[in-house]
Length: 290
Figure (cartoon, rainbow, N blue to C red):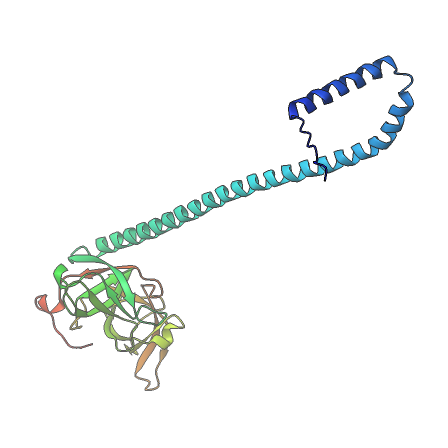
């Protein structure tokens, strides 16, 4: 068996040969330009469509790469803008909350001035029962802040209710709209008395029942009702609401009506607790007990 001869050529020699070959072709193309012109034409005829195809493919790839880069850029820009929108929405919510708090504070400040003779403690509502109304709710102040059972609570433009349970750092409030609430009221314009009843059913229609109005009284629509002096728990002179829809009741001896509360019991946030009990006031007569 004959031994195979293995010939190895180093890459640099191959490169040199290719370079020399290309150089010879360049020289021949200049020297015999006319003779190789048909060859150029033939090659051009074959290569031009290929070149166009290659250029089209290259352009398509370039456009795809450019589109991909633009898409990435747009995605990054969209994420940045979305982040800015989220921040603006968050800041807007904070501003709305601050405005709501400020409006509440202004409202309480005006209310405080209306009842300047009474000492008060401001409190936030931290929970309420499951109904749509603030008939029973809890505030974040308690005995540690001087709050006691049966203290009066006000908000909005007038009376909210009474404290019925007190802990060291909380207190529970029963509002005047609760079914268990009854208030001895007085018409501010005439000093005539009446009874305002808590009623969650009628509150769905926006009013509380008013009873025991003297049939001979000269009460008119829109008269204001305040807490009377004959109440055993409610301090006198606190606005409860305005009367409407007066009518003679079935006994033909008294009148009834409907009271629109001075407080919006669908959206309470802060209240003022008057830190003075009715029983501590001097020379008060208690003819009606809620």
